[in-house]
Length: 204
Image: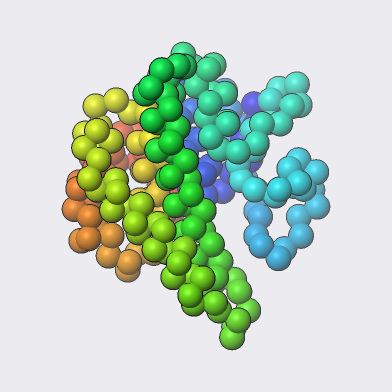
C-alpha cells in the first residue's frame, strides 16, 4: 500500500499513528506529496480530485480517501482495536472524532487565512470564528476525563493528539497549554508512545 503524506499534515499523522499502533506501518510506503491552496497539482488531482492529504492507494490500485476512512480500513485489517465495530462506544468515538476533525479543519483554514490569503484581503471575523471553534473544542475535551485518561488508545485520542500537535506546530503562541493544563498533561503523556513521538511534525 502507498500513503500520500506530508510530515506537516495532521490528517496524515493520524493515519501514520494508527498504522504504527496496528502493526501495519511496514506494509505502507510513505509517498511525499505537496498540495497547497491556489497551486495546481495535476498529477495529484488524478489520484484525488479533492487534492487533499492523505490518500491510501491499495496494491491493486483502488484509492481510499479521507483520513478517518483510511484509519477505519486499517483498523479492520489490524484487528479492530482503534474503532469498535458496534455498540454505543462506537458512536461516541465517531462523534468525538468528527468534532476533532472539524477542529483541525478550522485550524487549517486559520492557517490559510493568515499565511496564504493575499495581503490586504484578510477576513478577520471569519478567521476568529474558525479559531473560536477550535478553542471551544479544546475546552470541551479539557473536561473529558474518559478521553484524557489514556487507558485505551483509540481514534478519539489519536485525533486529539493530532489537534494538539498541530496547535504546537502552527500556533505555538496561542497559549493552549496554559489555558488547558489537562490537555497539556495528556499530550505529554501521549508523546511517550512511539507512534505519537515518531509522527510528530517537524520544528516550525
